[in-house]
Amino acid sequence: MLYTLPEKKHTEDDLRLLALSCNRYGQLKTMEAPDFLMDVEKMLIWKRLLSIFRAGVNFRQ
Image (tube, rainbow, N blue to C red; front, side, top):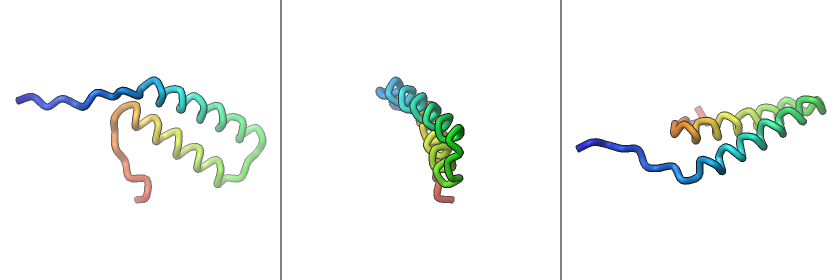
């Protein structure tokens, strides 16, 4: 029996959210936002990238 990954139905939504996060990161960088906000936005970008590629990572480690 072959194992297949479950089909990802929301890839387009993930790509849209990734684009919005990247845009927001660029805006925060030009506004010289605090490092905390930049780190949170970077984490969201990574989370969305990993969800697109169906990888699971625990960010609390």
